[in-house]
Length: 168
Image 1: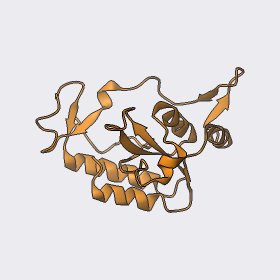
Image 2 (image 1 turned 135 degrees about the horizontal axis):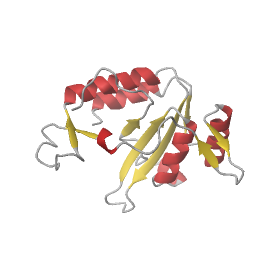
Image 3 (image 1 turned 180 degrees about the vertical axis):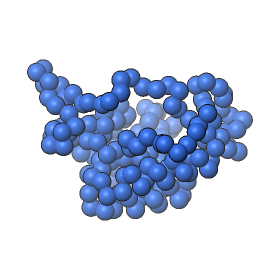
Image 4 (image 1 turned 90 degrees about the vertical axis):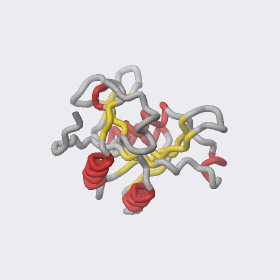
């Protein structure tokens, strides 16, 4: 739920001088190694480390509001979260990211230009930024320079675990 308030918060966060924009894979690998986030395997692949394995399918939430209340199939897969709880979690993530070295990728979701969604992914780890760079569609240099560059939906991510909120 990227409201105008959230977009301006992210813009402010990214203007502190410690942010890297649209780095190449080679440079992201170098940052990953320098920051001890990852190592290079014997076969040349980058290996990132986490304290968890796999994803948590039950940790996915969608803000339930007037837009989504009747358009989302709510259930075990699409769990609702109240707008107030989202805002509180968002504030916690933003506070966690403040003052950190950040990595940003401007990308697209969806191959058809008529339906593609421009997104700006903000990560605190270089190897996470490398992952999303490979996962989503990368704009051309011309698209990055144009007014249609993918920055309309900032998606900050952080390794902060919400201690104060019950999502059930």
